Image 1 (tube, rainbow, N blue to C red):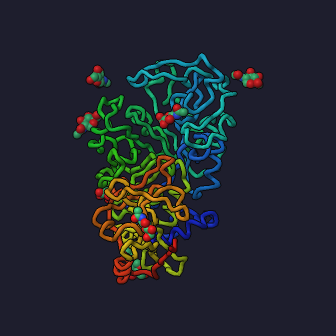
Image 2: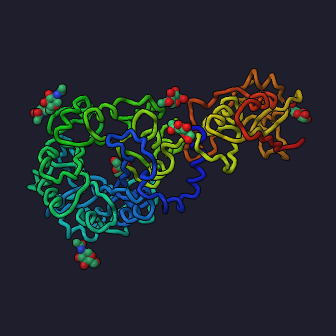
Image 3: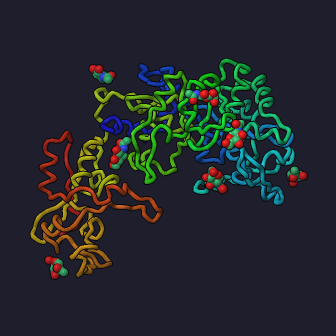
Length: 498
Ligand SMILES: *[C@@H]1O[C@H](CO)[C@@H](O)[C@H](O)[C@H]1NC(C)=O
Ligand SMILES: *[C@@H]1O[C@H](CO)[C@@H](O)[C@H](O)[C@H]1NC(C)=O
Ligand SMILES: *[C@@H]1O[C@H](CO)[C@@H](O)[C@H](O)[C@H]1NC(C)=O
Ligand SMILES: *[C@@H]1O[C@H](CO)[C@@H](O)[C@H](O)[C@H]1NC(C)=O
Ligand SMILES: *[C@@H]1O[C@H](CO)[C@@H](O)[C@H](O)[C@H]1NC(C)=O
Ligand SMILES: *[C@@H]1O[C@H](CO)[C@@H](O)[C@H](O)[C@H]1NC(C)=O
Ligand SMILES: *[C@@H]1O[C@H](CO)[C@@H](O)[C@H](O)[C@H]1NC(C)=O
């Protein structure tokens, strides 16, 4: 990340002030965007500010105007009721995101949805009047439930007319499904486009987009949505994975594609980032814009991003090789920052007269505390000052160690030194193996560092591949390391005196 990220975190802490001057995210900058148009990437608030308020609620849509850059668009997944009214909801099963099952306990049905038998409460079984007392709730259960049951379902035409937003994105998850209910999604969408400006229309169904292509305003961008690579696209009977190799075909009916973010930056099952794919390049070569979906600040992101969602956005929009043309986010304020403040920074122009950044046990979020690797990463990440908490060994050698009890940050528990553990109530209420009872050789030759996991009780673990990485440092090693680095200083802390 380098120094640019540090300069920006200062901006980030003054975020509210900053937003007032964000303006059209990157308009003020000399453009170096590697998007198809050369313009700044678009930001689309998925279902409004759905990370905080129930997805597709009026409040989620309204909040985008308050807490995102002013060019942020809002999106709505369109479903049809029994009486052909379009409504916005994040899931085909209304029970996932509304109080429908309280109002209509008998309303559960099973339908064939593009070849998959699916059970739930479906919009096609209810009229808009039936739904008047049904309210929205959070579909992601880890998010705040305080706003559940408060607000009604929002009709699509309200999204197009009632919110002060610069652009609206309608996603049509299903088209052919509706014919079994004598409903017609195509007619509904075309009637909307006669009354309102719809900036984007996306769908995962080729036939739907083909059937409206040429019948909507030239200003409306038609976007083909890729689902999971192994799922079958219902009109062509091909997998989305194979359609990805046929982008010239996609270009015949769409101006862009919407892909899950892992199409671009795949991750391993254990959540490490692989090299980026050629999707953005291929699509840009075919003349297609690329929109990436699946961004949220509270989803587990790859360890490579050090738990920092901003870094993730930057890897999609400002990586030196390509930029996606837009991102769909549940927390649009974060891509607003990424686009408006943290992209295209030129290190040599950054004013370094900013508050000091002091590491805490080195880059201890990525590597075990106070190891050579933790300090190397801290320097690479742009810390001004690196810190060494000093403990002393039995043979009188000062070492950098974040705890006097080696149980906390080393593998001593599984070593020959695990016993006898001693209780020194002045230091700790429970038994420990203390640095002053082992020599430097005991420690450096027999033990390994252990990454700290302060939030393990919430099942949040730090970089597991690095959990025993790196080597211990004596104070003298630390001083030698720091000597030729571009630092403002070092910080030595003495936490316990014997
Ligand atoms: C909604 O609630 C109102 C007031 O309780 C009631 O009069 C109305 O019948 C309800 N509508 C439906 C569809 O349940
Ligand atoms: C709703 O659906 C989403 C997406 O499939 C899922 O992640 C979530 O857990 C579901 N929520 C509930 C309350 O069932
Ligand atoms: C691309 O897809 C179209 C429509 O399914 C098909 O007719 C065509 O053969 C495909 N081309 C390639 C190269 O796969
Ligand atoms: C799609 O493939 C399935 C199974 O291979 C076949 O039964 C079906 O007729 C195909 N549909 C179309 C539209 O080609
Ligand atoms: C992500 O981190 C892993 C483990 O440190 C590393 O092997 C991999 O190369 C990184 N991925 C990228 C794209 O840098
Ligand atoms: C960064 O800024 C410096 C000084 O203004 C300039 O010389 C350099 O060319 C710039 N680099 C880039 C990549 O824009
Ligand atoms: C640990 O060190 C203290 C202080 O030097 C000493 O009093 C104690 O006996 C030692 N305990 C063990 C188990 O080595």
